[in-house]
Amino acid sequence: MMPSDLPHWKTVYHYFRLWKKSGFIERLHTTLREKTRVQVGRNPYPTAGSVDSQSVKTSEKGGSGVMTGARKSRVAKGT
Image (cartoon, rainbow, N blue to C red; front, side, top):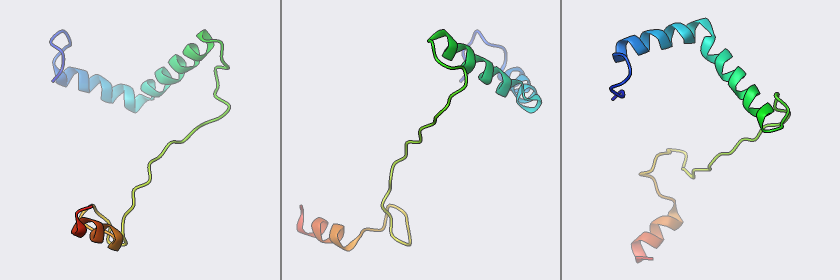
């Protein structure tokens, strides 16, 4: 599923693995993040973070196949 203008996927993967193992990918991301933040007039090093998450209601058994009692009664009544 790689674009046709890139090298064969095995070649791309080989270099990705080398760069990942050597820490190059992490250094690249850090450098790009810092430069981008400076370009938009921000401190190159973030001073705060934000975490966004979704809550998913489950029972002790978990999974989507388990319904709570209230949900079961609404489904049975057709509401």
